[in-house]
Length: 117
Length: 112
Image (cartoon, rainbow over all chains, first blue to last red; front, top):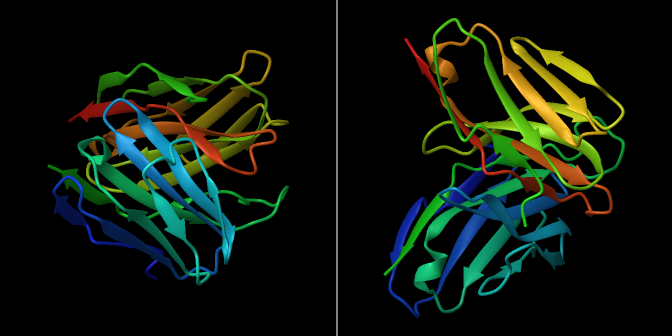
């Protein structure tokens, strides 16, 4: 069982370049999330999706765009990378529903380490 | 803004000892979860406690929740070197559209 797969695992960009991080899940989860993790900051939510074709902003959405064209995929795009976007990015997914056991327990990918020079 | 804040930031203990980590949060919640992260890896869910529960056990883990104080604690009994990791609390706040907000974590080191 693959769970949540992120690609690429590592990437180095120059300021102003663009790139896309891909997240794929094989658990038929409705909800998908992109977080960034910085030292001493914990995880901060960038964008999330509650279903195919829907996206919403999280706590730190500026400089990022997302798309959820297929239920199993959630893409995170950086149109013009900045050094402040150097971070480790985590994708996660969860089942939908309220009051359901394990309803929003997140399954995480292994992370994508991005360095912007 | 971060909903949960863990305390202490770092904890070092000997194998066999108990480890206690605390989490404080700011707003009313549906549930609170604890996750573990090994170095260089993604987070793994450990345990979930709902707002109407006060204590929950899972193997060597014991979680308590005090909604009046907006705090939770995670106790790992009989720690092993393999428990060395970062531990994060995450809250599902009321009205948050099921987003989880994570704290900054406690780095636990268990010395053999």
